[in-house]
Amino acid sequence: MLLGTFAVAVGAALLWSAFLVHKPPAAVNVLAGAGVSIFLFLPLYWIQDRSYRVVARVEQQQRSTAASVRELSGAVETVQEQVRETNLRIDELGPATLDLITQQRNDDEQVIRRFVEAPTWKSTQALFNTARNLNAVGDSIACELGSSGRWLFFGTGTRPARAQGYLPALEVMLDFSEPEMRPAASVYWTPNEDAQVFMQKLANRLKQIQKYPGDRQFDASAILQELADTIKLAVQLRHEGRDIAPLYALISPDWALTERGMESLGPPATIPREQITGGQNILPPAWVAEDTTGKRTESFHRALELAKSFF
Image (cartoon, rainbow, N blue to C red):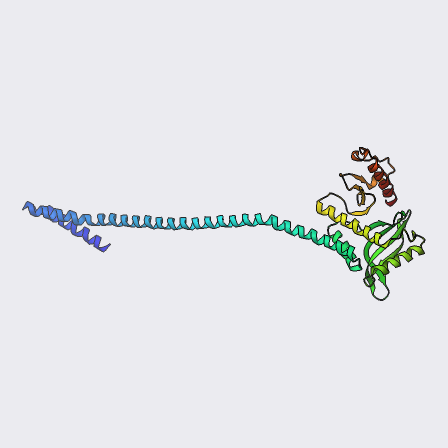
């Protein structure tokens, strides 16, 4: 700034001297030329300096812009890579989930096999827990005593004990009395009893209440097998995605009792509980009526009569 002020002062002085000096002409020209040059030094210097500054600023902005573009490109590549990884994980999610679902189904089937191969209190509890985890069965499972028309109702619960309070047990309710639908008696399978002891206790209790169907009808293996078959079917229906309510009993090859009423195990069909207990004339579904052999019609009417006795 001082140099510029000095240059202006010197230039002005030289120009003034040239104005005052008239002779010789060469001296005037020298003084005027020198004065103009020095006088214009400051503006030209300022313009040049500003130009350099502008150019430097533009170059800095270009460098900043280039760096920003590189950072943005890197960020875009990172996002694209994350998207590719996410898509890969989603693609893997389907097979991985299917593997877990298949494993769960295999585990459920293994629980049922263990009960059939070795019916114990523990395997019975596992059997019920498997079905109830899927909401596949109701509070109890009904199994017919041979073809006697009498039913046993299996359900997990607790047994009162004088010293221990309540013990976990498999409660088997024996037949029901009308119209209160209360069990005529109950027998408990406790953890310290094997299957033979429990089934003998069950037979003795049936004899005490005059509900024993006779030695030929009382088949312990068949009773437990029917329990396993009922729960196995209920679990299978859940795994297949069938819209069927928690199951109580298999009352024919084609029909089951559920919380809704009477439901088909074949083509979807439901006879609501209210309709069963309402005394109405209930017609079979079309696929039953269309059966020319009459077997499905017979199965339907037998199931309906059993459903009326249950509800």
